[in-house]
Image 1: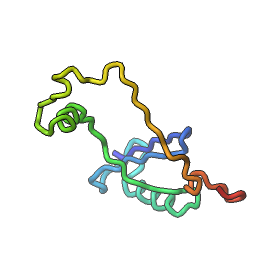
Image 2 (image 1 turned 90 degrees about the vertical axis):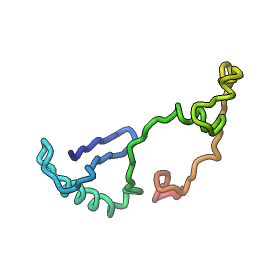
Image 3 (image 1 turned 180 degrees about the horizontal axis):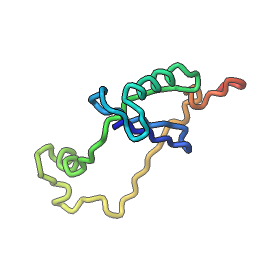
Amino acid sequence: ELKFEPNFDEGSLTVSIPDDIVGTANELGVTPECGLSLLLGLSVLNDVCTIEIIKPMNKLNVNAQWLVQSGIQNERPWFDMGLDGTDQVVACSDTGVDVVNCYFWDSNNGP
């Protein structure tokens, strides 16, 4: 089924198109072919920076535990010694905003 999910806060539109692109219309009468035509039309607009495929994500944290700790399935030596991150502080930093990215570009004043 073809689905349109606008996110006005982020200025984005998610269009879910089934793998089997030839299909029947959804409840709004929109066919997958029509959805592809919409994407093609959007792709030529100056305000559209990217169109990308987003694959569904699966959480595999259980596997990540043993992969990072030992590389051997279900062996978690750090956890076995009581090292589990309790009461630890983790920090992340970033190099800054890419001002020439199209999302930050001001056509009148530059970046």
